[in-house]
Image 1 (cartoon, helix red, strand yellow):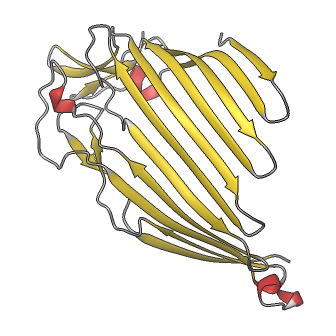
Image 2 (cartoon, helix red, strand yellow):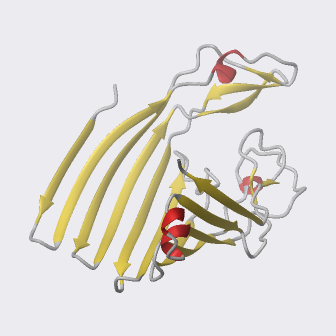
Amino acid sequence: MSPRLGLIHRFNSLWSAKVLYGEAFRSPYGSELYFQSGFLLGEPNLKPEVIQTTEGQLNLEDEFMRLGLTFYHSETTDTIGRSDALGTNTFVNLADEVTFNGVEFEADIRIDSDWRIQSSYSFQNNKDDYGQKQVMPAHQKMLKAGVVYSGIAGMEWGLWNTYLGAASKVEDLKNQNTMIVNPEAQSVNLLSLNMSMNVGQTFAIPFLNRTEASLFANNLLDEKVFFPELGRRVVNTYPQSHERNVYLSLQVSF
């Protein structure tokens, strides 16, 4: 059972607020239950992970903008992890309860008929029953910002940047034998460019109105991204696949 409860109130045409409570669970994967090898064992008696979240949200909205501020508190229990049992890595339900507290801010502002700005910022802290902080090595800070231009007929351009703050270090947590073999999970900026175009409308060629073109360029700054190794926690980080790349596509409908 995953109960949900919400209370929504609109103060006037501009301001509204929400108070929400929800529970969710994740059942173990088949590999976590039944995997058998010399280096990793499943556990058929694993319980589902459970998370309980309470959040409050305040919104301001009119025809030109939408602003939202959210505070949340989450508690997780029976998190599925791994533990060394008789010399073999085994899936287990971790005994510690992890608590998350965070804030999120969202903005969507339409400057005029051609330009729009969108952004969001989030910050979170987490700790376990023993007061150990950042036991879930995720980015504490994340900032997304983008600008969209649609002033050319049939075409839309978007430039977006995602800033990920430095993640906490697995090797600094208690009872870890993590080896430092890769760079730390430093802050990065992932800059991308996105374009979509109706060829017929853009170039005023009606018989091409069924032709769509798009361009997507990712990680324009060619940042090298490393993230904490959360599986076995044998090494500190591992590289993520955020190589700079460009995708072009052309679609013709009949």
